[in-house]
Figure 1 (tube, rainbow, N blue to C red):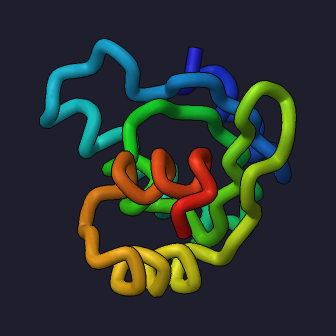
Figure 2 (spheres, rainbow, N blue to C red):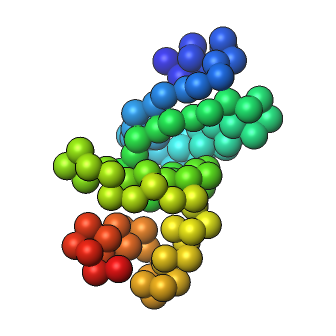
Figure 3 (cartoon, one colour):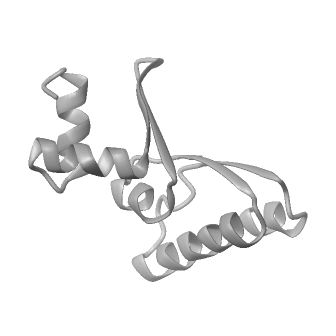
Length: 103
């Protein structure tokens, strides 16, 4: 399905859990492909995921929703700055702290 969506060179691509269930090598290939598509062809990619590594690999900005409410919407660099402030290198820990208003 991803290949079919990419054939038409869309200006916007909306994906839900695009790497879910993939083995690590295929997952990396898919993320590399999406990253190339976003940078080389100027495709905007909006995707939902529960995998922090996917976010860190290709996202320019991150919007996190909790119970339908926007918890934060930050450029990835600013989010990584919060990592340092929170003294964590784990996005899961940071999101948990943000949800509980610890940061």
